[in-house]
Length: 258
Ligand code: ATP
Image (cartoon, rainbow, N blue to C red; front, top):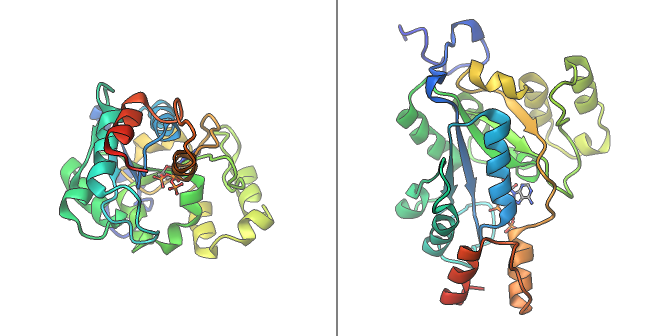
């Protein structure tokens, strides 16, 4: 590897001084999900991540066939269509349909390898997820390879015990003490994940300094909404208006999905 800007695969954090990023075009957020259906908390997460990390764009990646959960109720194409409906007319939000179109099991690491090749070795990428998804990370296929491919931006989520301090100004020693001394919340989380967190914890400003490798918590407007709740309300004949975008509501009604 002769080009010093190229990210060393061994450890994205090892030599930050030679990891000049090509940040002139801005960091890119990657937001995967089942989106069964997309709801307003997904959109708020993307909007507030864009603000927190000064993202040039957020790429939504609907999972084709998520390996770690029950089969979604809506078909892959319907979930893709619902995300497309929600993103229409939203500048800076893009849709990546590859996982749905290929139909193979949706592994985030495979998607990130593809997007890393697409955006080049030096562009900062931020994989976005809620805190509930983050604590389940060790069950993901090749999860530790994710840190070589992207930063991880972890959004607060109501109901998820706080594992990550979302205050960017907090000093390093306090952060480590809070994480490693957080008692019950940490005790239930995979020890390898806690160790990765302690090593990689960063602040939003760190995103622009390297292409990958940091775990950066950020606080978003708390919305106790889930796709499960939306499906349950629809199954009971209750309204989900203003919990999902109107365009998604129309799509659900037209296709009688839930
Ligand atoms: P389900 O209820 O079907 O499990 P979900 O509402 O969690 O669905 P997903 O499509 O599985 O939605 O989630 C995609 C991503 O969005 C995940 O990283 C998840 O943590 C995050 N997310 C979903 N809802 C919220 C929320 N209310 N606050 C913060 N993050 C959220």
